[in-house]
Image: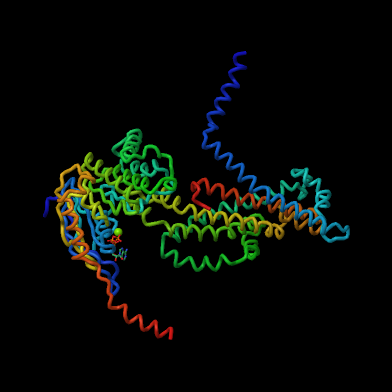
Length: 290
Length: 280
Ligand SMILES: Nc1ncnc2c1ncn2[C@@H]1O[C@H](COP(=O)(O)OP(=O)(O)OP(=O)(O)O)[C@@H](O)[C@H]1O
Ligand SMILES: [Mg+2]
């Protein structure tokens, strides 16, 4: 009996301690609710309008593209079973997207490490800046897919080639933004570091990285967007499991509804990736990054 | 060889080389005793910050040198802490963390963790910032930022405290308030201070000596005025004080008669006909 009574009480107290409803917090929540409504209602209205228009335009059974209702009925199996596994490449869309995300994760992680390091180098050293910057400026304009043949030739395998394409796509904005961020660290911050005599490592972690973080994160955000753009195109060419090849396969099988569904998923995942990096950036820089 | 606490000896500073070289400072000689409060005043651009940065070790003198407590200054260090005009708090750190960054580094060997924490809190309390420990610099006012900057500088227990127009960006009321605070802290700690200012009243009110600099280029020390007003000083009582007003007048006379910034008016007339000719 006593335990039955005390247990909920303790949990209640714990919850109350965590979510201490201070007046400031309440006001914040109210404000959040309002901005949520103001931000969510317009897109829903516009989306409904566009869907209606699409439905109307493709209502004719002979139309080349399926109407939204057709898309849903054609792809219902895919929608409700994102994680089926019929062997081979015949996997649910969830698996396809996870496979693409895995490639992006490897390529992007490498790009983050190499990009920030090179960016700091270019930002710190005038010599590195003069030597490397022109090369970067030329290489960054090369379209991602143009790297694919050469990486296939180098790696002789499709998996590392796709990862390399992601890496080489994402790295330029990360390098360039990091370099600009490091160059733009105000002298005052350096002077603070000099007066308290921070050593090289402390200066790097306590002054340079946080001071350049808003720039670094805008580079990271551009980088993740480009990676996702590139992976879909790269997978169309290399085949195997992945959302890009799924789209290509659906096109070959003339399953246009599948393509439409896949495009929607690609868009949503890309959006979430962008927001995720933005969110982390916001957390790390305590609101000073965009 | 002088036996003063801080001595600036024949300091000269030239920026750049060759034909572009700009000689900013020439023959700066100044000695400061322990516990003395020095104000440096002079027109904008004459080289006041340059002097302070040489003392701080952030800039190397082109010739001459600075000796502090028997040792030559050749690099920046916590024994010469600075408060900048634009506060220069690190925006990603809270008020507490900004002071902690300095204290944890500078006092790492002399204090344990708990002592350092107490020391940080004590210094923030001294400038009246205990209520905002977890605020970010963007969330507090300009006056508060300057207080935190002062707390950070004081927490390093510097041999000389260097203030570069610490209150320049503040409104008159906040400035007066902070000046009183600095006088109170100074009465307690008896630091050696060099402060740059543009404000004649501030200079007379706060300092033991006012160093007046001539206009650049090749600026040097024009006059030094001893302020023999008794402490503690009260701004309201001093407003009527003939001695105070005498000092004020001396500084104003130096700045506006002897070192007046003469604008070359002769250059203006030729521009007029040219513009008329263009219009015609
Ligand atoms: N790093 C630098 N390189 C070249 N010239 C400089 C540099 N720093 C300062 N100067 C020049 O030295 C002169 C003095 O500058 P300083 O900042 O010391 O003036 P100041 O007296 O502090 O002026 P203010 O009251 O406006 O702050 C100026 O003419 C300035 O242009
Ligand atoms: Mg200055």
